[in-house]
Length: 505
Image 1: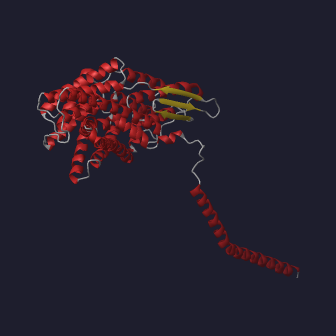
Image 2 (image 1 turned 120 degrees about the horizontal axis):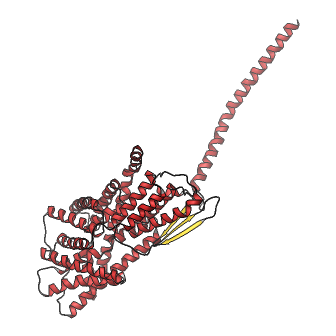
Image 3 (image 1 turned 60 degrees about the vertical axis):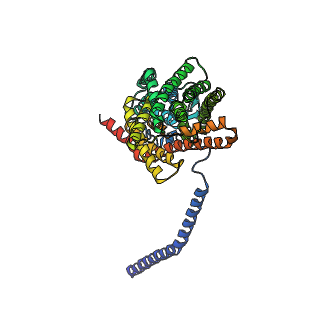
């Protein structure tokens, strides 16, 4: 009897347990829609907050290495070093590096990314870099130590694209190949002391060759090209004297423009078979601050407005000096009895298309020599300029207009220049700037200047022509930057491939 009672009690207990489980399961099923609804509501509120909130607080620090995204130095190898001991030496070396890059003509973004990449490679992560036209400021603030702030002011510039390419290669080797800081300091010192690729007489000859070829490109006669050749030698000698005597750049540029215009006007007075407007246009091309304009637009697009404004204002001062020199020569020539020019009807000669292609290539190579580019970059620069001329011809044939056509050619040049520059371990600017010179509207600039100086009644037309020329120049510069930006996805993995190749050695 007792055993039967115990069996019945155990059966009732099991039955009650099963019932409770079934009840809990049923309750959970009933609660499931409520839990899902609450969870969906919470997710919706979270998504709504993310939509209206910033990714990070305005004053929150971000990883300085993030500035390297899209540059040739993305994902650098970071070494662990005793930061407090080497911080001062590292920052001083980085300031020397940035100063040399600025002196050689690099843009602000390239200088900043190079400095950040080098400091990250040498173990400094808690840094801020501020570049404002002539000044480079580096602030190092370790989490558990005293902050360190150093400033460097760049006070001189020089044409040395070969040196800029060598500095670019040095930064690449530091980031990818693990060059020690002592070796890097020694290599930078060697780059600074290394003589330029071409002696002064070759630079003068290359500038004269460029002027003569440009005169042929815009429709001048062989005699006009010869005159431009001679006048350009004189222009460059005046520039050298101005630098030697420490004459301000404004007056040296004005004197050079005066000499180029004066020679053409005197020959015009003696009925020489030349078109003086075309000759002057060829003579002033070497004076145009094309590299400064490209760097200014590049800095503005890349988020350096103060540096861009400084470069743009400096370029405007150079343009004002060119205008002053040309106007002075025209006014003095008019007072001396030289007949006025009809710049609206400039007689030009049409040359075969294949000859124009060769002229563009030769002029770009000559410009590279003037900018002291490396010898190994002359032919690639000429080839890219010829590619840009083909794009210019096709765009002109389609009928894109006088403003959009050079911009399209500049995009092609900027795109190809980045591809070639990355392969040849050089900055894009070194190849792109000499390759776009043939696109600059030198004849349009001279026409506008002449109208402003000699026809006060048509002052509005002259100012409109000058504005149109400046818009074309800005479009060309923006096109180069756009081409460089479009080429970045195609060169994104090249640095990593180079890193793997270095590791296998």
